[in-house]
Length: 243
Image: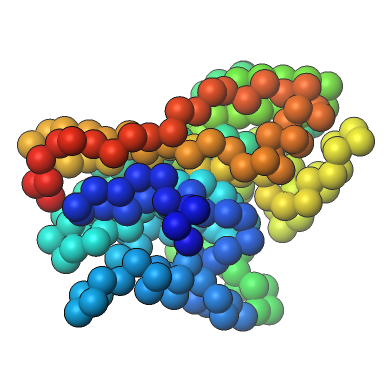
């Protein structure tokens, strides 16, 4: 657990979650990040609280609060959509056209057996939720592209469904039509990484927390000829603890 820590101060604890680890319990989920946070509990105090979640197969920055006041403030900021989120994703069969833009398509949840899916739907359909995602092509090669993604809303599977809806599903995303193999490279998991989180703080300050892509994603991109952007590791802030 300590190897996952990428940022810590008196209020916050940010982790670089590996792919394959669920954020919280659900159907068939036994070992979760939420349970593992007991490793950071101090004597007589509660464990850090998750502020948001990532899909099980998505890697990257996930934020927790170490105190109740911080959890309350950050939870309200998340609900008000004041956080900035940046993801990296490998898609196929190449760069989207246009190479950057906004996907504004409503979606709704559907149950298929024991599995939950999100589907694109008409904005006025029953159960419809508005959803917006910005994308920008960072690198392109034959049959693949690396995109930077910024969701403006936080719907389940939003980025995965939006990219599939424009014919550019994320590599390794079997649920939404993503290729499991590109060229001679195998997508052993969903190639989606939460690279940065821009956190609003009291007094108008903002804190940017970043996480470099894991080795498997770096290797996958290198094999496809896609250039990953440099991601600097965050440093602990000397700001006053005012959350």
